[in-house]
Amino acid sequence: MSSVPSSPLAAPAAAAYDPDARLSALAWLRANLFSSVWQSLLTLAVAFVLIRFFWFVLDWGVVNAVFYTTDPDVCRAATGACWAVIAEKHRPMLFGLYPYDEHWRLVLMMAIYLGTVVLSLWPRCWNLRFLVPLWIVSSLSIGVLMFGGVLGLRYVPTSEWGGLPLTMLLFTGTVLIGMPVAVLLALGRRAPLPVARGVSVVFIEALRGVPLITILFVAVNVFPLFLPAGVEVNKLLRITVGIAIFFACYQAEVIRGGLQAIPRGQYEAAASLSLSYWQTTRRIILPQALRISLPAITNHIIAAMKNTSFVIIIGLFDILTATTAVMQDPLWRKFYIEAYLFVAAVYLFFGYALSLYARQVEKWIASGRI
Amino acid sequence: MTQSAKPGPSADPVIRMSHVSKWYGHFQVLHDVSLDVRKGERVVVCGPSGSGKSTLIRCINRLEVHQSGQIFVKGLEMTDNVKNIDTIRRHIGMVFQNFNLFPHLTVLENLTLGPMLTRQMKKSAAEDLAMHFLRKVRIPEQSGKYPLQLSGGQQQRVAIARSLCMEPEIMLFDEPTSALDPEMIKEVLDTMIELAESGMTMIVVTHEMGFARTVADNVVFMADGRKVESGPPEEFFGNPREERTRAFLDQILKH
Image 1 (cartoon, chains in turn green, blue):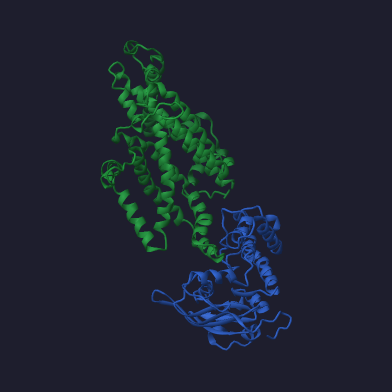
Image 2 (cartoon, chains in turn purple, brown):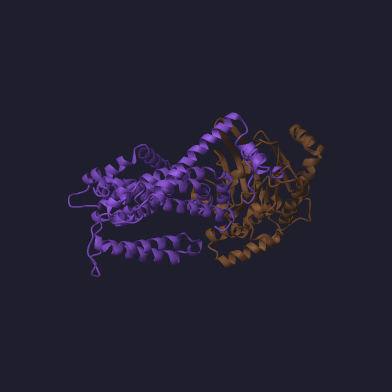
């Protein structure tokens, strides 16, 4: 595990950066940036573009920017960015249509949510006797905070939920529903039973072949037609399941890739110890397959976080849609770029946190800690 | 048997293979092979590669499915019946050419997994058992390591210990030393010889003719999916009846 065989691709690079042949700064420049006329021209062109770009960012984003004002006219007068729009509009952007006076409930909800997630991702807490009660308690308190209607809290229907908390709930729902389904689909596709195999193949291929928006349209507009009169399934739940199943079909193929990498000898060794199919799958095959496919799994999880913005089609306002709506305000409309940069930064923060965590998990795996 | 120093095999066969045939598509890998193995008997199966010797022993615990003929283990016939397969596998341990240890588990976890899952042993009891067999194969100090941190010979000894933890009555060895560097072959063979001396019923597919000569009660020679001849080692090596056997022995013993 510790010895990483150097790939053939790595060899020439290693030779180029041979430490024994370390050159002076000038020689390095000549060797790497100005080794020929053509390369020199390319270097100068790239340097020009980079300098112009950073100069613009500095000039627009810092030097001439307005960081705080409540008067949009101050921003209009400035030539730089108007970061004041974020201070002015952050609450409807982050919390959408949720009643303004109840925003503290969402702040508390996000604190509980993030605390729960961080604890769950920490190997020292990987103990069902701790995690199960933790998730029950935090799910209940998040439910109470979001819906209200008890303990003197005002009732807020899901149609008024929005912003970052909505994004978080959709994302968590997608992963918690989608991952187990993905594992089952991946196993099903390789199962000895022809029925399980057929169902998995049809399910994966059918859903993977259509755009997500179509699945969501079916979940929202077509699915209710099949329900008996009077029965209603919450729109938010339907759309979460829709995104989750789409996620699961892609993730299933990623996990199947990991399953295929497991040598036949592992199955034979398990069989010779007379382990059952499920014992073999759970204790021998899946732990190895999931480790192998972890980078690709992370990839899809990050994509799933961003797919949550599709809730726009049922008129819910996640952080992206809420921002679009908020920026209709004629007084501040001009500064939509700054607002979208803020949203991008929020996505980037969570996306990058996920990929850092995934890298840490890969290190733990390599060191045999998990 | 003639070698009175060894614990003598009893009369009842624990494994009875009769007229076993197997095809891969149109290609017949086993032609009507019959073999009886009595309790405590050590059988060595040898032959050129592609002769079906591995397939033969893999049919005994149904890693391969035979298409005609019958296989009985302790009187129970190996059929599609899942319960039979499970019961038979509990009697049989298997050691593979490529070890097939579970790389994500430590040596100790590799050994305790089977007893805990299929024999419902408590963790502490399973660990005691595992350490007992790790001492037998002389690597108790490696219990906390991962398989890939060990040498090939050590890995194969762990694999033997893992099979022994299921306390089987029969052990199958599928070319246990073929993937090893020459200097590691001896440590694995020594372990197998000790196991043989303890009275274990063993079927060993191997090219190690020295092992066959000293340990086997019965040597089986296979070629082209057929059992060409079999007999006690002194007869087999000293006076082979078949031309094919002589040609094979000439080749393998010259070096």
